[in-house]
Length: 183
Image (cartoon, rainbow, N blue to C red; front, side, top):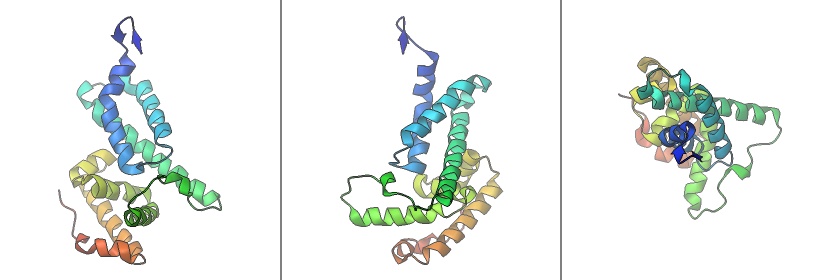
């Protein structure tokens, strides 16, 4: 909102932080029907607490952490909803228009396997798979030490590969993928 010809603090903050927040949301949720609501929740948290960040050059890092924590909480809520609900994940979370049916099927099967991983393993693995994030970047975004990030990535890969044994189409694409994570 422009007040008297000037932009507000909230607009400046949004313009600065929205690329960081939206990129992370898209990485983890893709074309999810709840993305806008989650982004809104994240920006409400950011606007309420941004003044607590003492160094303005650390604002993007802080916003990334707020985003990651909100996404982790959303994954936990969804897992609980599926557990409490007797229904499987609905199709309404998938995009409505697809041309690449094989790619869509592969993506849906991969997403289903990722959802079976614990959140502490799912987040680092997704960052590496979809953003090609380094171990150092994963450690930074998740608030882990580098050793913990490596350990969780190794565990996530092993668990994912074990789950993929039941999915030959996914397993075939993972053949060269078994190596140790590096910085």
